[in-house]
Length: 226
Figure 1 (cartoon, rainbow, N blue to C red):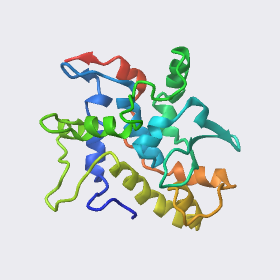
Figure 2: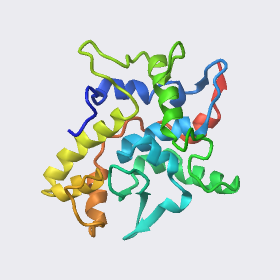
Figure 3: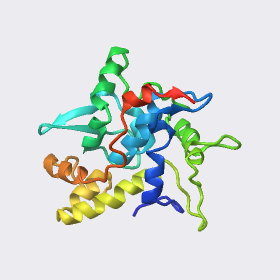
């Protein structure tokens, strides 16, 4: 995998823990400053393979329909190529359509409107919330997942892209379509700017393992304080 040096994907047990943590449960932590992006960003990262900065940049106009399939259009990362990624059914099951309607109702144009940028980037705020900083515990620590394991390998929000890559590699090989793998990850090995067979991409994407079929954005909104 084209991973960051010393970075690893989450294990199956760690993914289960992350997506059954307090964000996706029924209780809000004391003094928790809940934001909508806390719910959506880890989910979109897992089901799309996008970096947090790409997800933070998503406009409502970047949710596009291609060949009768709804997709994310990622096009804001300098090191990887723009790409169309079909939206996994699990995101719709988690209330994405309702959330988009809410964003429109609030007159926002950016999908994760409550994720602030720092120096023009969204990834810094995400990193601090997810992995912590100094004495401040992040979501990882609150889920009792170490950010560095016994072998010195790190986990961070970008590890979710590695989980995506791990699975997509298998499903693309099974479909005998390495081009789909390179395109979905934004790798330069796929030279054309577009991928014509969006249903093929969708077939591969929909095989991603569902991390928690019970989670829903409305449940997140309605969580009560501990």
